Length: 504
Ligand code: MLC
Ligand code: AMP
Image (tube, rainbow, N blue to C red; front, top):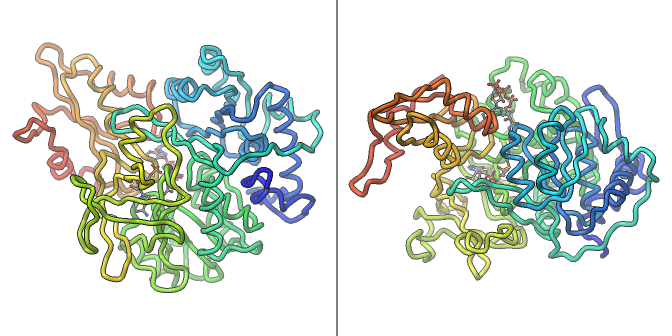
């Protein structure tokens, strides 16, 4: 097949007047209309001089046009690099430079700030706003709505998704056509998606969950998306009666449960609720079933691997577990020290292998070797066990990572910045429980002897460098950091001592 990912996701929809995107205002974009827009964008990319294999970075609000940029990249054989809309110019600069992107598409309000970034990296700059206007759609307007799909091999790259690292430097996870397609095919099958499905889509489209899971699965099945700009409980409650399925991070479900309008009657007709990207508390699972009669189906995935495990569609969906390895995915629990496989029931690091597992980190062969074994097993950095019934349970992380509202935050990136601030001798950043986001960021700083740190000044400095979701929600000055006899900072003690800072 010429371009397996494009042909499977989009190719079957040519000429179909079936709804693909249903917007908040009721506007419907059919599969055929979406494909026409895609073709015009693909022609615009070609006119801009982009070639197959080039990288295209997109930092734009969620809109049908932003989704069509993804589709057009796939059709053109261009590697798609979506970026969190919260990233600052400093963060975007790193991604564009590191990926050697040829084109950066951003919101018009950010264009002035990002033009120097694009110029320094020899990338073209185009704009796209939340309403689908900007220089890119302007360019595409005059183009014909047909484009000859660029052939791709199964192992060719389709997307780069940046994921932060424990060293503080983000790594570009290289995802191939096969990685994305095989996972979408598996999920359509195991979650029983059909063209009759209407998925309520309130996730961002710059991450695996909203883009590759929710969107690819729906596209492959030929269904439609109730395409909301973001999660807003009012909108979700309004639209749930029209949906058959919904995917979300745990925060979506706790926010819905906090709303008295979210009742069993509202969602009786629903076929499936899926949760992932962060641990769903067993308590939320139980409360959800009590309120609605539905058992949330929890699954486990990662940027580098797409989805690895899922609770069963038929059969017991067990709270506090992420279910079984998906068909085609091998999963083992190993001893972090020796790498030996551990018996069921014992806690160790989770490793996975399968067609879903990425190709490696862009231009970081050493990082790739550290995490992706020569035999194809990827060391996820999650700690877990396989219970006596074969369910996988995630019990912790072997990596210093905070997950806030489904966004990953690597403490190292914040610590490096805090350490640089005047008056700060050293710092430690930890995640503490938060009633809305699951976990949230707290920064601890130790003052230099001479100049005490100015906490407002530090917050302001962090604000210019890091996306809002990474900002410490509290900065605390300590006389010293707790350390073990080896001199290593004991973050577990900080998490324990400050665990109820945000107790709801
Ligand atoms: C927004 N803010 C966050 C935040 N999201 N802060 C911490 N963590 C977050 N996740 C900021 C806002 O900028 C705002 O700043 C303040 O927090 C409060 O905002 P809010 O209005 O309450 O937030 P909201 O816009 O409603 O967003 C919350 C959310 C959103 C949970 C709906 O973050 C979200 O959609 N998360 C989904 C993330 C996701 O898709 N993850 C998948 C990763 S893929 P201020 O300025 O007001 O203080 C992956 C693999 C897998 O992990 O397995 O799926
Ligand atoms: P990301 O790098 O953004 O793709 O995040 C991947 C990480 O999210 C995983 O390594 C896990 O730590 C976490 N994660 C994803 N799904 C779940 C889940 N259902 N339960 C617990 N953690 C999860």
